[in-house]
Image (cartoon, helix red, strand yellow):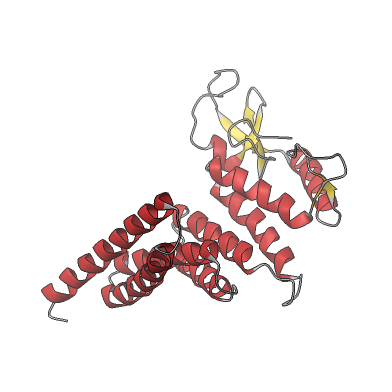
Length: 243
């Protein structure tokens, strides 16, 4: 039931013809020869039976906690449904099946949102939405990507302080949203977003000076330099057009 190309459970399963080896549609679309047997691929045909089996397997896990097969801990350790879909989505993302990753990360997001305001994990939700933005970017869906990054920013901004992980993730989503605005020609919006990211990074850098971790401080200094570079690029463009 796993695609040998993206290493995740098959998504939109097809059988290559004439060899009938099974892959995700998006994964095999990059090949003219079958990766498993080397035969020419004449066409692909939807394999509804295989996909149905996979969907049944996934849906069973959507409603129950399951043993965590990746854990080195005790047998009793379980993986929540949200974590199950997160694992599937990140595996698909790493395997460059962005449609599968987007769909499975959305299932994870929905499950996390259902936990309610009190138990809702803001940092994890922010990370999931940010990954969805990355998928939409790769698929050329720029408006969807911007919406995902904005939602990521909203969730990460709600994380209780101090939370270095949330703040660092926040700056990443801010910069990606700024990049989208920059590429689409809205340089002023990009500059404003880059400036927000810079403010957060400078605050993190100042806080790190009180810690003993020189490695963390150096990494944050690099992050600040990157944000300054983005801000300067936007300022140059705005100056050139007289803004």
